[in-house]
Each structure stands twice: as C-alpha cells, then as structure tokens.
Image (cartoon, rainbow, N blue to C red):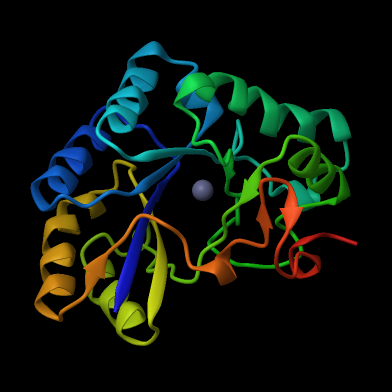
Length: 213
Ligand SMILES: [Zn+2]
C-alpha cells in the first residue's frame, strides 16, 4: 500500500505549520496545492516557503478557487486563475509546474478544465495532477482518517486529497499516518501515473474526461 499525500487550499497560518511538524516527525514528503489568493499574503507565502525548504512540493490550485475552470467561460479569468497563481508561487514551483484543478467537492469530471485551461497548461508546460482518494476531511474532521485508510487499503497506490484548512481535520493527521504505517503502508512523494494526464504540457493519459465540451 503506497500513499501520496496532498494538501489543498492553504496555506493557513493556524494549520499548515502544524501539518509540516507532523510530516517532519514521520519524514513524510508531500505536495501542497496552494491558492494564489492566499500566497498573496506574505505570512502565508512564508509558510509555503518553509514547506518548500523542508522538501515538500508546491503546486498551483487556482487563484480564487471559486468556480471549477470547466464552468468559466471567460478565457481571461481562466488565464488569471492559473498564471497569476503560478507567478505568486514563483521560485517555489516544482520543475514540473504542478497544477491541480479545483474539483468543487472532490469530484472528477468534465467540469475540471476547459479548452482554454488545457491550452494554458500545454503552452506553459504544466503538469495536471488529479487524485484517486478523497476522504472528505472537510465534512468529517474526525472520521476522515478511517475513511482514508479504507481508501488506501482498497488500491495499491493512493493519491489523497486532504486540506490544510482550519476544520480541525488535520488534528487527525498523525493518527492517520500511524495507521498507514501500522498496516505496512509506505509514503511516497511522487504521483500515481493514472492521476497525471498531462506531464510538462504533454498529454500522457486521457484528458478528455476532465475537459468541458
Ligand atoms: Zn480545493
């Protein structure tokens, strides 16, 4: 059982540093898919800088996280959502320029991207990172760890979406990591290939299911 952790929607001063402390304790490396609107705040960007310095990867999770890109019809807004955020990530970016679309409740589907977004990701040689496990930590801040463990046990390699948000859920992160290790699982930082349909701007898997018509 391999497990890759990702933390979306931060950085949050009350949560992300504590997540980093737990990851350090277990020597687990993860990816933080940050929001541009939050990185514009120097205090929050400093947290992303700390994560990067500690060996975690920093990815782009749109600027405002308001509407999934497949439901935005103004190309200028799509452009800003992706590229403004990439600018704010700056030198903290992973060389593969990681981008995770906003799923709006964790669902995979054609609402994730549109043609304009795909054009930008290709021309900017970005990497689209999806997921295959969503324990819905925001809905169940206590029970998510058991749900996540069940999802990890059900497949050989899970890429989990968690959230470094002030829901209380990350108070269970240590317990979850312990449970995975108890089950003989191992943590890794790279992504299952089936979760990466676009690598450095090049399609390497089916992208159509995630692009609005
Ligand atoms: Zn999100």
